Every structure is written in C-alpha cells, then in structure tokens.
Length: 399
Image (spheres, rainbow, N blue to C red):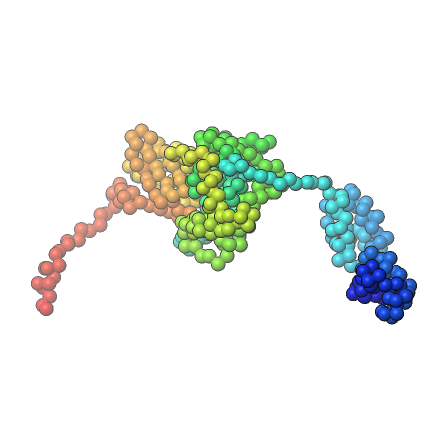
C-alpha cells in the first residue's frame, strides 16, 4: 500500500513534472497499476479496517422501538430489556449507541443568540454555598445567596440570606440593586416559590416590591436555565473562584468578603466575551438605567402581639426579651436582617431593640429588662459596695 508521501510524489511527477506512467514506474519502482490508481484517486490513501458485525446489530431495531415509546428511557433499563431478548454484549457498546441515536427521538429545540440592551434586564437566582455559614456560638447554618447579574455588562452582585421566604429574598434583591447602583427595566426570575404565584403571576409581596420600584418582572418557563445563562455562569464562577479556600467568622464576614470579591474580582476581571471589564461596561449601562429611589422598599417582617406575662417573643427559634412594664399592651414587632425592634402601639414607647441572632434556640435578654423583672418580682437587690479612692489604699499600704 502506498504511503501518503509516495502518493503525493507520484501525482507531482505526473501532473507537475509531466512524466509518463512508464517513466514514473521506472523512477519509483512501483507497479503501473498502482501508479494509475494513485493518479485516479483524489484522496490520500489511508488504512480502512473492514467492518465487523456487532453483537448489538440484531437489537438495534428494538432500541429504536423503545426510544420511540420513551425517548428518555435510561440506559440501564434498555440493557435489562435487551438482556431479556438474549443480548449478551457489554454496557459500553449500548451506551455509545444510545448517545448516537437518542437525539433523533428527543424533541427538537433550537436556540438563538440573544443580544441585550443596556439596563434592559437584571437576572436573579438563588445559589446555595456548599458549606454552612458560621453564625456564632459554635453554630453553623445553611445559607443562600441572592445573585444578580446585568446581562449587558455582566456586572454582578450578591446578598446572603438564611431562608427562601419572601422577606429574605426581597431583601436580597434590594441589596443587590443597591450594589449595582441603578434600576433595570425588568427583573428576571425562575419560578421561585416566594415570588411566583402560579401561571406566570407574581405573589402580592413581589408585585408590591416591583410596583414601589417601578420595574417590571418576568418569570421563566420551568426547566429553562438557558434563558438566564448570564447569572448561571456567574454562579459557576462563584463556586470555583469565591468559595474554595475561604473561611468566614460569621454572616457579616461572609457578606463583606462576598461584596469585596464582586468589586475586586468578578466585576474587575477581563471578560473574554465582552473584551473588556464588566465594571467598565457598568459605567456605560448606568447612564441608561433609572436611578435608585431615596428609600428602597421596606422588606422587614412586621407583626403585632400583646406582651405576655413572660415578656419574651420568639423569632426564628430565638427568644427576645420585651419590656416587662408593657405586659398586656399591644406591641408592633419589626424584624430586619440586622435587628429586632418592638414599639408600643398606643404610646410609641420602645419595647425592645436587639441585634438579631441567626444562631438557633438562644434567649436574648436586655440588661434593663432583666433589672426591671428583678424589681417586679421583689428579688433582693444587689448589695451596694462602697467605692473608695485609690489614694486611701496608698496611705494604708506602706511603700
């Protein structure tokens, strides 16, 4: 069999050098029939292995029938059904054939390349870190990060929350918009339960939030992550660049490191698709976006209760003390991401102000509440200890 170099030399001698077949045969030593075949062939010679029958050949029609009935039938089940019909081959040959023919039976789907206008959309999603977040007192807790991405500039932002309930998710959206520094036209979400009421309609809390900001909303179809590919890729970057090798003291440290990472790494890197930095494009995009309002929508939890004889209120498994002097009166409690504040409805007196704890099953008692409780229960007061000036001790102790 001729090699590629010999085949090329024969064609060069004949078509370029103008030599006859007899002269080429004399110079190269090849048979004239071999030379004629080389001149007639427009492709270089290559070794072709003769095809061998496969153990799977008698069962291919059955595979087509099974996939026609259920295109996503798992390969394990296909092999089990073929084994019942006498198939004795291996797993690899079946899996390779399924990869080849299964797309012929799946619904056809085509994609179009999407171009975004500045400030048109802001895509959101929830990302769950692989490790729980330290929240103090030796405890850790599962957290979620509300991730935002402007598809035009690829600028991103993130906010840590500890539940998927509407107040927490809406707080995350508001803080992300605050980090991005302007308002897009539309907020894009998948069908998150706290925001989506069904059939593409928003929940009342999400609709009120968007109405206050004067922005639109758009819910994606189920199982359609490609429609928000910009934020999906940003989440992948979070998993590979932000989380590995980091340690966090508490939730505040996590949020601080997250915002610094977005500012110094994610938004400041050179983006290969954009051929520039997202931070540079964000400056251009903000010029097309509406400014943030002076006050973002209130996303705190609020409820009214009557102060019980045991003056404590439970918020997220933790008990917070209330002013014992307000027992029996109605108090409005406001729970934010940072503190728990209670105000008496009839007089406006402060019922409590606590730093919110995300650690579980703790009792937080303000010092003034504990003193009031002790006085009301007629507990003996602490003995008064005389305080003397240090000069008195110097006079008593010889130098």
